[in-house]
Image (cartoon, rainbow, N blue to C red):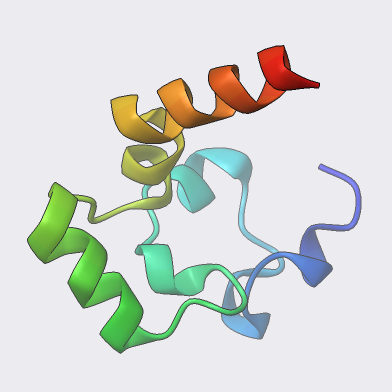
Length: 68
């Protein structure tokens, strides 16, 4: 993925997409450990893959796209 260094924390810049998918949500730039904990408590999201495949996020994305 081009420009990955702008999307993840420094420790994750060289990881494969498979490794990133299983990385904690806090590996994404702008998501702190505290915010990641809130996502886990509220929606059971632990990994980047969990976030990317969460039904509520997918529904919201679909609605936003349809509204364009």
